[in-house]
Length: 273
Image (cartoon, rainbow, N blue to C red; front, side, top):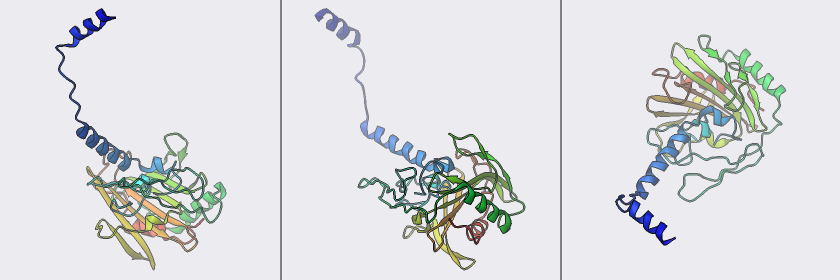
């Protein structure tokens, strides 16, 4: 055994000492975590109970980090602020986000939908959108997979039931304004209708007699605009337009829909649970 130890010591005696910069590792980890939060996008919305938005995508808003409180899906920030609220459950009504002091993750209750989430109601909501005239005639949508785990295609402007938490619609969209993706989400996370004090990227405006929250996030040429409004029954409707279809590379200089066009969608009568 002594001979082995001596041999190993001799073999490594000329090796330089390991230099581990713990502070640099922590900084790099936080930066990568912030970017991961920023690019979770609509796919994460399809697996998280509510917008903690954005929500995703619509992230995608939140939690002391600037912008409206959007779906985890939806947070995009040029300054990589603290993370938006992240809901830890996937379908249980009343789930709360966990929180650690100083982490940027806050405890936020997520109320259950006022009515059960069903595929039948999803089809009814799709019909409401189709008959509303709110979708611009020159906005051409393309079907996309429901999520990374579910390759079945979502037709443009059609909702599907998102487990027991809400309804989701997502499509790649091209219009005269730009090219990218659009996400529509019915949920109950009211934080998505609030702005952090002093945050100039988030504003509460009036559209068609209703208060709508407009949040804009930018990062590396990618722009995400999210508009949310709340109905008296507890339904929150969020619409998000982004100039990227993969949350990695911009498809053009601007999202395919403006905030006014998104506001027209979220204020369509009948978009409730």
